[in-house]
Length: 299
Image (cartoon, rainbow, N blue to C red):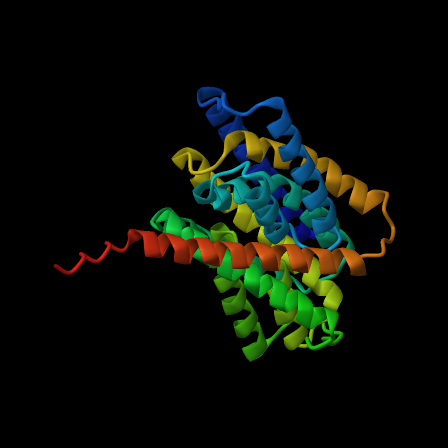
């Protein structure tokens, strides 16, 4: 219980720090080119993606896909916008699941710490990537997410076990894996599906995936946001749409909705993110061809 309270205290500190930094930056750098219709789109995306994120579908891939389809956020700002905008809604999710689902203390603390360290390193790497590199990374992330979702739909991913913690070599594997997921999270690659796979493969209870993936995701997003905000490497108004509407979506999903027929929705998400991934790969290849100098005509 003491450790749980300590983790919750860390969440509160992160929330306060992020809100102070965000509103300070928001006030100094107002994005005047965003109209009411576009903000409505940001609010809708924030609500719907975080609503289903709370149900375990994940928010990064759908949000990325919707931003691409609506063109509300430039490609180069999508990773930072995802991290800043989803940070507080995911913290709220983490509060809920860490409280109601039991996980062994050592496993929880070490995997959360590994995710935070990976998140800090991932932000630095992301800032040094050109837009084409970010687009390629996001396209790969979307495709991986789609493949993992298809595998889970057909039951190709192991069903897991009943353990609520890890020891020995399995604990080391879990910590290293969560560190890697932390590095990828600031680049716009969600950790939900990969975390579920890791939990299953290591023989843990499928339910344990929720506090682990949401707890580590919350801290990594917050740690990343603290670096993204001062750099201005995010879309401020889109992030506010994700934060404000996302909180409402999380609360409704957690306390009002008891069960939903999610199968059809999961297939829809798979189709959307697969289409977006293919589209982004095409844009990368098209941009690469444009950058090549035209051959001179022979005389």
